[in-house]
Length: 287
Image (cartoon, rainbow, N blue to C red; front, side, top):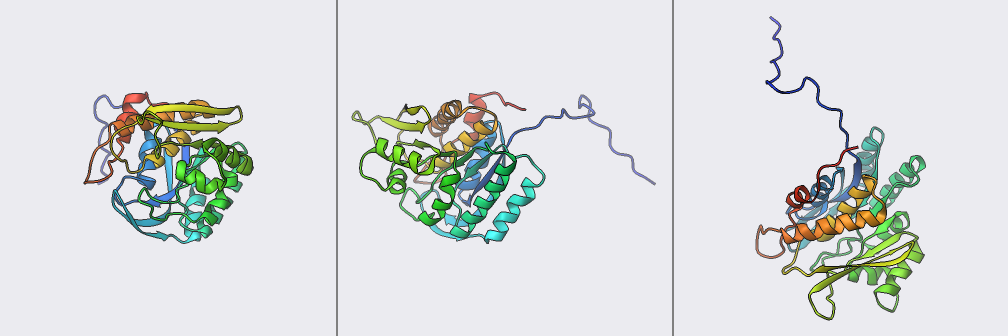
């Protein structure tokens, strides 16, 4: 006897509305603490109105404070993960975290170049994670050199900007050097330094119209995955159609609120509250 399907519950529409979300193709490592990498990216992107397509580049051994080991996945596997997605789905933005190896960076670069054959203006946000907050090595410079020329926006913190620019001078000189060298826009985040009063964080955007500065109250404590959160949130807003300035405004506000609402899972660095702040900050936006 053929079993008939159960009836729909009362009040449930026969057909769900045909809503879609913009997608962000993410290349990053897996952090088993859930504080950084793919876990952070997925939550931040969802909170900002887009859908993450997470491609794993590496498996890490870490907690909320230290990175003990990074094992890069095979470059062919990384590329196959991405190609299975890009063959079927429209990609609205790309977010890059740690590639894991130079071979993986080369594979990611091939994917981005193929996507830009279809979508020349595809936004690519690169978080150049050279080391953890404790100085544990994460990404070789040789791997980043393959990706930096493809980035629409690169988001280094102060130590990363100094290493990438490799020039004498302060933040303005470093931002100008990076912009001229790689042609993309640059947001240098100031969480590793304080102003003269010691209570503000200053972020600087070097874009087509020169420099723009944001200043945020410094929050007590240390946070795991703040850079991932910011870069992923920017990529999400670009995927949703924001211009760069508007995306930076929204993403920095979101990140600050996520840090302000952070929680603890152990002693040491706190975890940004990405999903809670996203619900508070904005109504979901669909396309």
